[in-house]
Amino acid sequence: MPRSRKNDLTAALFRLGRSATQAMSKSAGHASRIASDALAAHAGSAAKVAQNALAAVASPAPAPTARPGGGKWLEGRWGLGPFAMRRYRLYLPPGAGARRKAPLLLLLHGCQQDSASFAACARVGAFGREKGVAVLMPEQSQEANPQRCWSWFGVEQLVAMEAAILMSIVDHVGNTAPVRTDALFALGMSAGGAMSTTLALRYPERFAAVGCHSGAVADSASSLRQAGQVLRGRREPDPADVRRRVGAHRLPPLLVIHGDLDLVVAPANAPAAAHLWVGLCDAADRVREGRPTEVRRGARRSFVRTDWTRNGAPFVRLINVRGLGHAWSGGAAGRAFADASGPDALRLAWAWFAPALERHR
Image (cartoon, rainbow, N blue to C red):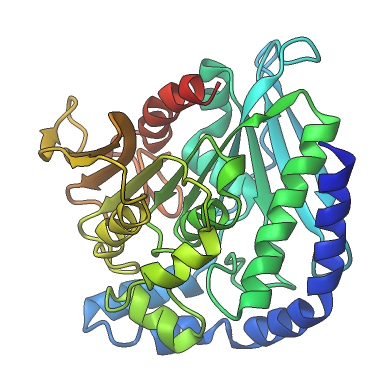
């Protein structure tokens, strides 16, 4: 990473530190209200499922390990102070080295998960080994949020600080491991999904493509009350405000995966994210929406896929999984927030990301 970029990021983190620390402390003190205040409007079983999803402790998992010759897992910490320090795990595929740097996938867990449980849920090691992809998995601290949710909503200082911390981890790993930060992707589950698209809106030039699985539409809430409206599908971002933030940067291609039976994050968030991306195109761009296509693969859940192109190139893909709740599609059986009967989300994502990698080159 160029020294000027590193210095700029460090200075930005220090400038944001004081106000963001106050905002994070307030967010941590009120985080448990998300389940009761923001989601209480769900009726009957929907409210119960939503509250349990945020209140329950996700199934823990041991630290991930790789089999001999199957790559390796590394652990580290990076940050600037107690509220800006985050643990992370990094999977490196076999053969990754100084002469053969691997593309990098930033993978963000959801609430009530940590990097180890999410790695087990999504079978990250097997995916990275098969595709030759390095996977970076930062871990939200309980000091920053008791439910380990990423701060995808809140006052601007809080969201900006969270985004800057995550990008600083990316740059740190890029300086210390054989990965390609010029071939960077982001994908997340739930709050992690909302955070991955939040990163793309703040650092669009850094990503080859991004994805959101079961997440709220980004840049849509600055308070707990507004976040509750978003989770219920009753609030969307203001495209004009987002456009001012993005400026002249062109957004990276977007993948959105959502279940049509999600009772925690309303399925309406998925098309809202797609339409936000499409709405931020330049007036001169030729944007085309394809016809929705139903896809079924073996005994797994079917899904409806809708694609948008920008100037003839793939731009947005929306995947609506039939019968999927608030769970990682194709996740390991018996894990929290996983549905083993769904199509494999990581492989769906890489089918969308890999061509973007070639275009990005």
